[in-house]
Length: 197
Image 1 (cartoon, one colour):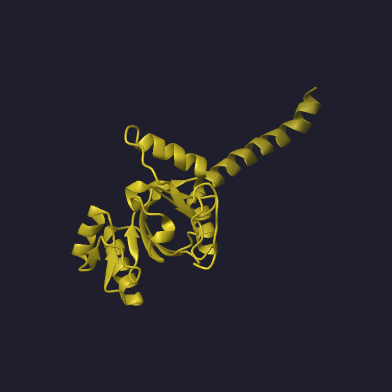
Image 2: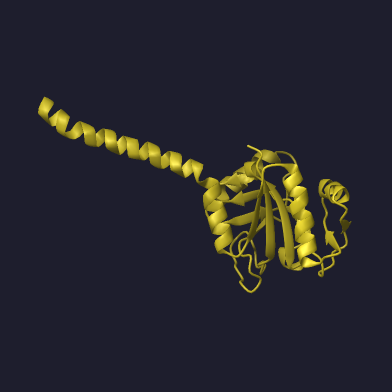
């Protein structure tokens, strides 16, 4: 009996160890998986560790594309734009980018989830072709299911509407699933991701 225990014990330990390592790698690579999937779909990714880097990246994006202003609905982002001396407008102009936050970053497909909190009642297809999204690492989730559960948890009373995602960052591509409800919502998109964990 001891002989059988010795023969099979190391393998069992090894399998348990591999499962533990695999689970750890999965947890650690949530952000890596998102970035890889996001970039493979044509997204432009800028990682920041401090707010000053965020500010500088916004200035650089605007200068690189020679935009004179940005469209935004978000009051906090308007304050940020004042700090970096960039004009903003709530009336949508397709010649300028739409600057927004998001609900979640969905790791397994590299997509970005929005709701009426960011896009109001506008369909993604009706928003400007260029997007600049400001998000934080705490908004990363594994899949759509976790993203929707996160929205339910965040908005227990005033549940947002118009939940949709962008999952292609090359405007010629068109994707449809239940989160895009008929929108051809590919966008030329910059993601500014701030480390907050």
